[in-house]
Image (cartoon, rainbow, N blue to C red):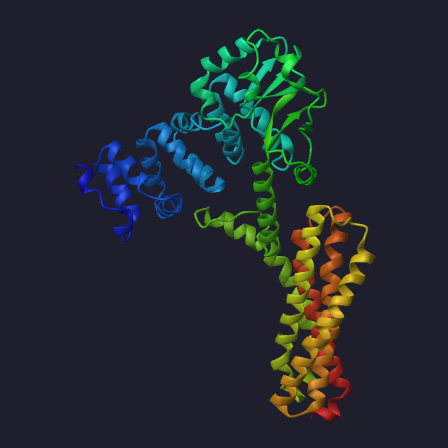
Length: 460
């Protein structure tokens, strides 16, 4: 086989089969060339359609550097899953080609036994750095920082610093190096050195003389909210990270904080949709995916019994005015949508620090004003539809008033419940959705059927 026999990935209807074929019958060079013709999205698509054994075979046939590049471009959960398919030595050789912070991210997603086995295969210095990083939560500065950086002592001369950079030129060329960090003999951060400062001063000058002293820094324990606020207030692309004693531990880039903000928002959305365990991909084990979904769905069955009980209580009214059955799901759905909008705003403002968990009266009043306007408009529209549908103005009044009031209830719950849950230590992303759905359903059904019972003589 030669390069001319490799088909373009765009011309292959089932490109993963072509990759498997080349991995089994072709050379390493041909396999690398084929994968290099694909975009990152195409590579993710191809590997998501392979059997586990085929994935492992492809990765193990690639040079460790190429496999690491491929792994580094994939979704974090998917990359960790693929690493778990490999024999420990192969997994370690691939991870070793990645930056330390990416190694820590992937190892942190592996089962503890597998992670420890891979750490035993890594060089001791790398393994120690990975263990230190994995000890931090993902949403604090220590869990987001990179530990590979230029670090010099304050008594070093410019000539000595340049010589050290030249010795590690190959390693430093892979890093985003714009600043060097100056520390004392105890490793405490004392200054920041823009790289251009090394070029325009005499070689015998001490770094302590040309550095920017007393630089801003953040603690390893700084939360995502605090870090987002820091970068909102400063135009820096990165900031040094120190421990409580002021010892330099790493560098935090602005883009890392932005990435974690997006992940946090995605996780909150997934939780609100009932996927409690976090990110889900269809390449994950079936039982894991099923368990994550059932954890919310099972609770929701119990909660929805309340809505069913309301309908059962007003069964005679519903049987007498069958047209109500047409509008019950409309009122439930429209109120739920209004409530979800309020939930989204509260979750967003909580994440940005714009509101505090104890401000529920202020939030409630602002939502009531919007809910009154929107509820009146939506109620009028649905009421008109009901009159056109059935020709009975009383039916229009019942469903219109019910939707207006239920919209007020929905936005009140959607705006306030996330704050109350946050205040009492619960995850608002998990619990807000089920509570909102159940209460708005029960309230909506009760309002429609209750009002209909009051005006039953006019509706029949």
